[in-house]
Length: 116
Image 1 (cartoon, rainbow, N blue to C red):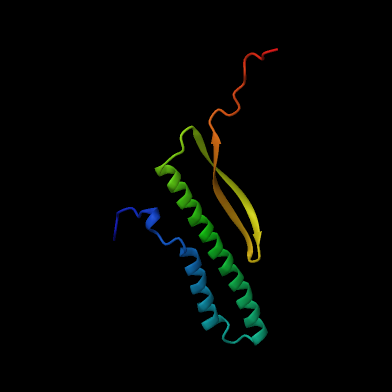
Image 2 (cartoon, rainbow, N blue to C red; image 1 turned 90 degrees about the vertical axis):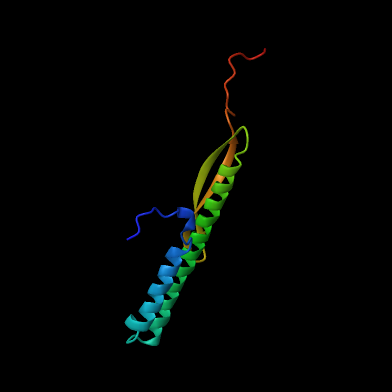
């Protein structure tokens, strides 16, 4: 048994998508064997959309990790890096988009005196 920690960057970014594809093929080969054509088409459509949604989510997650890694290697001077998240409704279902946002440090500094 291997005891060394896996590098997160070395893992397959589409691991979840591959697993869903395997489940869909398994379902098609075993569970759908006795189903009628309508049930098979419905099952394939539902599983196919989830597969596409998961692939898109894995892509977005990989894109965010690459963006974050690039900012760690060369952080912009005088800027603060934050993570912004939002939900996005796609043709295949809802995905979560994370992006690195840059903002100037101390951009809202209060002035102690105002010139009148």
